Image (tube, rainbow, N blue to C red; front, side, top):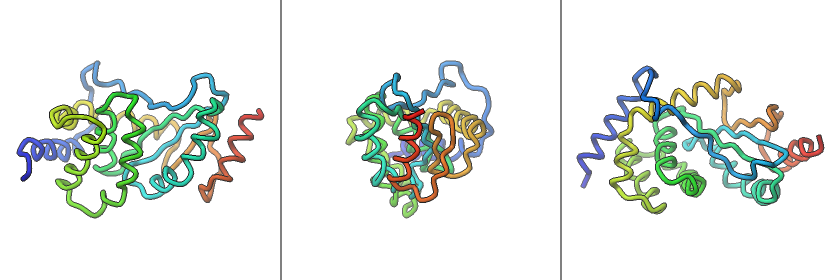
Length: 204
């Protein structure tokens, strides 16, 4: 049985996607970068990805675990993860991931990417139900998720944050990366390519 309140949330989010980005309350305009790794790491890698993007899901499954183990955990690389929003599941996933405490964010990211194929095969109401199930796994209550997903002010702030970052870093496709501020020429997105670029940055 569908929750009437959740149906209302869905309607609010769909409607918000059609609104222009406008000024919002001061305490709702700050969107934090999500960071993994030591602030003192000599290399900073900025990653742009969307939760409903199959290449981002493939990167997260096949390449990211090795980068994390070999570069991030040993304090050589600091990762800044920035979401992109090409459709509603992308931004809904961001709102869900940011609903939890920050120390759970990357756990939720992994859960969202594990469900990537779902986002294109189901109706919006079913997608919303699936997103709620992800958050329950992460320990959030339905009430807390209702609050997050009905926050249209934060929705607008996320859109403005994404648009500003994408314009500043010339992001037009995902996954996209900056390594110490430079865009690496990565074609195949395999681990060996990242080793070349990360090792070169570490040697500078």
